[in-house]
Length: 399
Image (cartoon, rainbow, N blue to C red; front, side, top):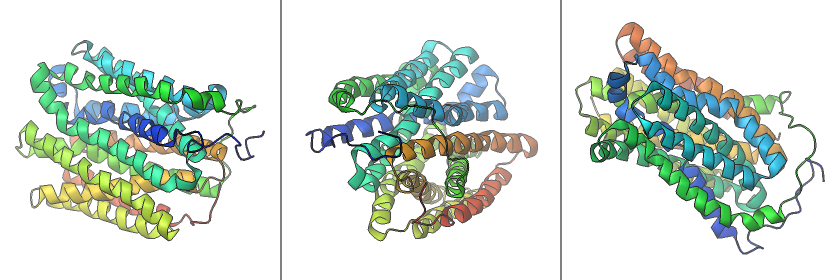
């Protein structure tokens, strides 16, 4: 069977394991953001302990995002070699190990080294999940994409809201950010037995190299949309809390605001892919979600203290929808599971390398001007570009 031919492997529903696989897919997704989202609420403490500049602190968030780009094709290639399910097990193991390593002490080496290992695992898992969804839930790809996107958002929300209390309970930021590795261990323990039958039923590894769709204009527009909307998310995730700390808020209150930013993302992540399935056209939802996020970034830049809780909630609502739309396009615009893996590899490689510039660029601008207004207004401008890219992809376009 070639990579372009549809898979003949049995569907999970036919094997009586559809709901179980769905649950463990969501469990994997929950673990692909805490290693990143646990850092911003404690960024001031980390900077003070390790002597990091704002640019260096931005790099701490950017590093796993760089990994998500550089190592996404590695995840897709490993999935072809050993099977998607086995490759996801490797990804979870890396996330768990890298996150736990960060608890070994207040050290630049363990912090950045653990973040690098966890980032590689996050990259591999993110590249593999669209292919899992396309292969095992072809008739419900949009709805399942919404569920695992909600899992990603839930993981970020939990880490954003609970890391400061963990810091108080465990006596420092290293164990607080490392504790999330235990969640990845639990997901790995659930994933391996749940997918054992699926690995046994899988088609043999595809021959040849993984060829990314560099010559496809549709793939490039999806890739640039993925990158620009991810840039907005990671820059906002990194600097929203420090902005309000700079305005005199306590760490607990700023952490709760970051949790509020993440909470509405669950609802838009669930709703928007289902609406795309119902209407058959993602473009109106791109306009709504990206437009809302862009407006809120401008509001935070111009009047951050006017209605901070409303700004954060609406920003989260828009961000959750635009991210779900990016993942939905990776599944819907791909003609086969193999095509989904190729498109995901390209979109994550280029898109996340672009996204990684967001936290560092915003931090560098803050270092240069001493104000958060300029970085957030720049993000609003990038939101306008993301909007144009998203609506340029026709719903009938295929890679």
